[in-house]
Image (cartoon, rainbow over all chains, first blue to last red; front, side):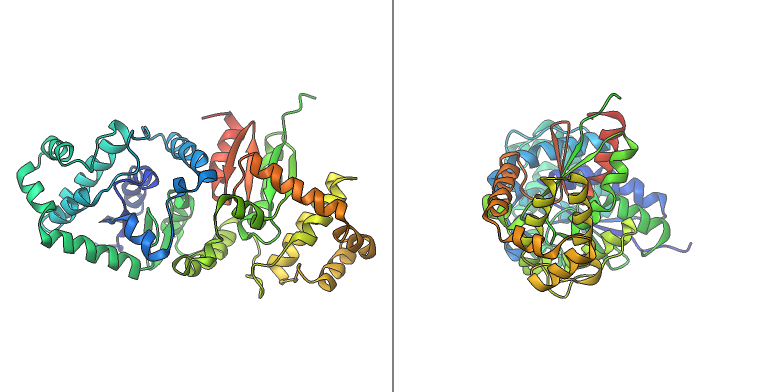
Length: 202
Length: 202
């Protein structure tokens, strides 16, 4: 097999555009013979590094952004509901991701989907340990082991290192896609990503 | 004729994504029986109202943004070169726009194209009165009359009023498109705009 390099996909569990993109990135990549390499990060860390704030923190952008999340989900045919609590702290969900990724990247990707879908279709409070434990169990994980992982300094440090690696790679927002050394920021870069995957650099 | 409402198009003469969108907005609108209603605004005014800064003011976003301007232009097949002086103050070019629009909106749209193309393909320094006078003459305008217009309190006030009207309409960045009461922000909303124009709200 002449394996083509994977598509890197940086996401935050609390990012609506990350969720929307997470629903098409694997199909788009697969259509062009690529796998997806998932990276759970904390937007709070990249925002802090970049001196940025989330769009809904700007009064004039807030209403537009909330409407655009929904419209962009409808545009992609992705079920979506603004969670009652938004945004939320996602470090526990992200640590579970890296704990799983250390043994099985496919299992980590399944957890990424489970967490993003739970939050953005059912409003599951990912920041609340009790709700996260229930989601882990629903997802076939050992909730005790998952909770131990998100409290374990090993996975806290791993997530911190992954945030730093993302910033070092030039990531300042989510979703960000890395393809053949080129970065694409935003769910709305889908047409450019599709062209790049189909016919190379343009 | 069963006239459909026009597409409102807010732009700034110094905005790369406005320039790129200005090269496709008329063709896309015309394909769906719509005219384009152009609005020259100052991003500085909407940024100030919204508490925002341009993307290149953020260190981590700067390199990506400059590369993304170029890549997005190539993606649309639009000639583009980052101007040697970027961004520049565009109030004089915008006042000329509103002066022309008061007598002929088509002439104002031609001026919009002339200014955007001059700045983003030849680096013409729109903020320098001498360069702007040359551009006016090249564009078939009376340079003395144009300079009188950009120094005239009437057109200064008109531009100020147009900036305020844009902010009141929910505009916080450029390009912004208004279609049937719906706002779309960004050159990258083109696929959503095309779907809306083709088949209505989604």
